[in-house]
Length: 392
Image (cartoon, rainbow, N blue to C red):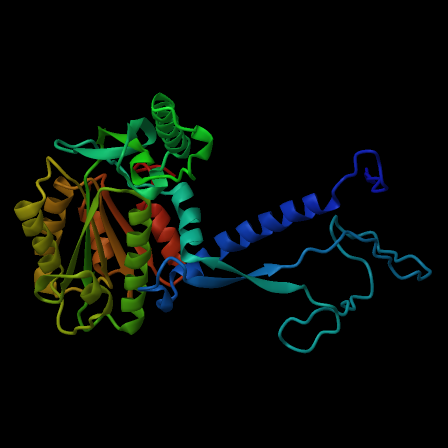
């Protein structure tokens, strides 16, 4: 049944634009989520600040309208052998928008672009994702300032904490004191000069410091930079790691990052080298895993840290290293909250390490994912960052 709304003026006018704004907001959010995969895999995203803007196509909103058919006479009739859903007619297709094989003659959809910053994009990611199996570890209690609780006043502080009302009251109290002093010495208080604020009048809110439990989390990013990792695979891996690091920095306060690059040998690098330096050579997957195990033993005791290694490779490994790679991954899983293995653009379907890892590593906290094309990056991130392992 059709429902018609009366939009004529009434004592309480209905704002017709409210519904349009709501529909527009829904379209924007839908387009952002549909285009997340393409945005996250842009090579230009690496190294950009939070104000980097991305353009997203959005279909225009049209008002509902009646569309009339052709007033042609006659009725199409069948032979009696028709089934539900069959179309009866001469089979001539309607003129349309074109299917890519030729020019169409119908009006197209209105498409326009809106812009979204990387910061806003991360807000959409933060809604649904979280570090899995995040535990409270020993010595995770650190002293932080509680921004919501004010405890008294003090004479020194930063401008955002200036207590204006208390400052004015302090000035008034000083002024009243001066008036009393003038009365005592029989002076005319009406002739008292202008009474400005002084530094001593300023009062600031005191923020109480209290212990707050923060979970210490360590992210270890391990990337295969050998010769088999061509430029396409490397930029996919770097885009994946870059978005992951920005998401974690936005979501968690007390988190540490370590970066490891490897060929047949592995080394700890800084963030800039990890995202920009290119190398070549053979591949020993175990070298990157063993380096992570050494790093944890030296700096990040497992009983104090929530450990999250994330490894990216094309799955091509030197055969003699396969068994050692599997053994080292199992060892890293034993001391980690989660170990994620991301295989990029696998060249075969049966010989890469993804399939050996999936078959031989029976650990609940081991998460293997495959990224065959750039749009798969978003799905890989969602798989890895489930709030709890095994959650769909």
